[in-house]
Image 1 (tube, rainbow, N blue to C red):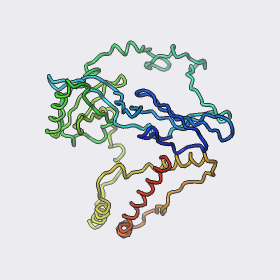
Image 2: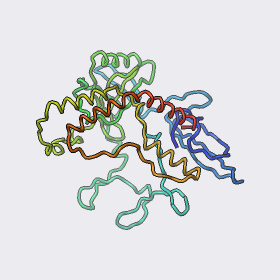
Image 3: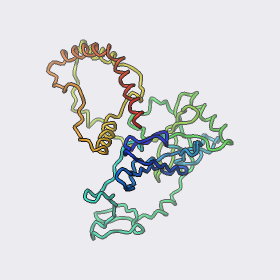
Image 4: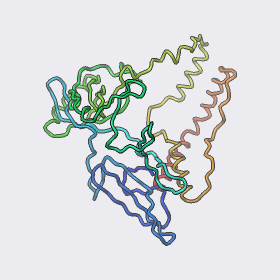
Length: 348
């Protein structure tokens, strides 16, 4: 159910008395683990793990990741061939298929004409832009492919801006950029190091999935990190959401108490400290179902939040609660580490 960095790592959902067969296929394809359950004297194929990987490991050889986009990076008259790779993925999350409850068979989607109710063949499906109620302009794929702009094949850096000037509402998706051949490595390194030395980010454009995106370019290790940005019309103005919040003159002591709580919780960002607790509980639920165990509600421990009557008293009580937590911080971290080790042993 969960992708692992090791293609030979076992799944948390594993039938007892099973023969494990692993198929490792070529670059970019899927790796499937098939368990043949022979506990009841018959061979029932149970697909318990599907891994979609951007790279595959075969006979100890690590294959290169598959590029999402290939083209050129250009700064004035300097250019080099590059490839774009997704820097994030949600494929490790548990996912479900929709099935028929009565038969257990997987469902298949079918496109149906909204007016006639008749199924529509794939070759008869085209894009349509609505110009009036029930009226559409039909657009063919080959017509869209004729739209050729420079950013279709080239990311040209148009300008450089200080990173803090880019509002946090604008970044969307991160990508890694790397040179694709040795000839262009020097030009790539010049652009990368210049961006790093100036302490700024570059702004360019690129066409992905038939749409032009503004991208923010910044140095990252030996390569570049490109992050797509939203256009101004895609970002909602905050005024409509905050206009009913009144301007309050707060007591200095109240701000001081709140600042003290913030100081007690201050630290450094480490994404490894955050566990997807819902994902963990979901995998545990699936494990129990496979083992035939009863499913019980999962509840988070801790007091139920109460409505604040006196804010000053609540702030003072919070400071006292934070002081009580500090001595147990080390032991809590130890328990968390032990828990992680236990999960690894079970195949997570």
